Image 1 (cartoon, one colour):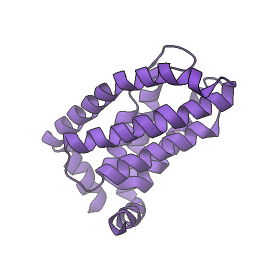
Image 2 (cartoon, helix red, strand yellow):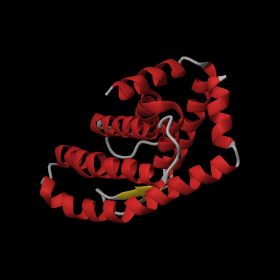
Image 3 (cartoon, one colour):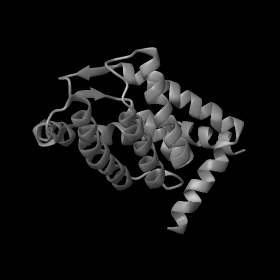
Length: 187
């Protein structure tokens, strides 16, 4: 528990650094732009690639910054290109996802096991249960009527999201871009 508290305080103090803010703002912009390129399968199912930038933010700058980027990306994306009505529950989900990525990936070596754990927790708690609850509240449909299709989508997307992030992070790491972003933010 002490380690988790340290992660939050480190991430909070790191956010006060101008270089961290700049890098987080860049990742925020990438998250918003990637959010525009998604495949809308039904009213309740869509596939997007914006979680990659959210995971990078959590991994590089921790749960506090991950939370802020997640929440701000949801609000900014709605302001720039509104799709449907705004619902704050999805903003909470985006913030919680950033916290989970930060807690599991921040200041830890990149490993496929850790990425699988982070993506699995987000897929089940946030994407499957919490977002299905928000859709139930928003559209009035039965929770258990939406759950099977959303569960199938999560089963399909979990390995895709996991491998996409892991390969992206590995490539950025080999090109020393992750170290440059971390180093520029912590110097």
